[in-house]
Image (tube, rainbow, N blue to C red; front, side, top):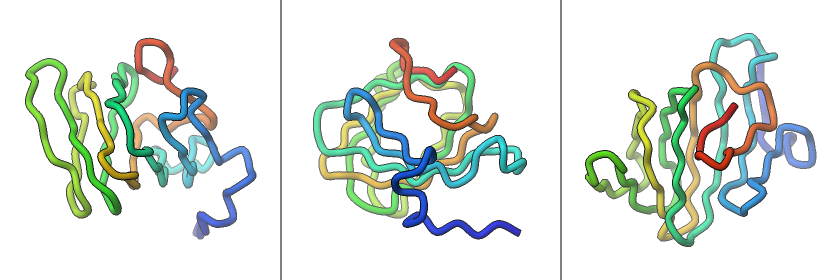
Length: 126
């Protein structure tokens, strides 16, 4: 059994700040935890839209605080994201997220992240 208090992750290798200021991610579960997925507690600050495209990972995000706009870059379709709304990038969807207010998500990645990944120039993780 694993019990993780997010407060204990601050200041450790599991606290990851985007080098461009796009998010702060507390990595609750990683590949080394042997659960088969990663879980994060991620905050995206209010600001301009950020483009991400996970070519090697599937991701599901549940908004628990804040709000913003998710845009599917292939279709142009937009969705309001607010607490209680989840979205799944089930086809490696190229997308943007604009936080209109600082937004906190619980995110699940498959395959699991190794640790300190941040977005590459093309918006993906390794």
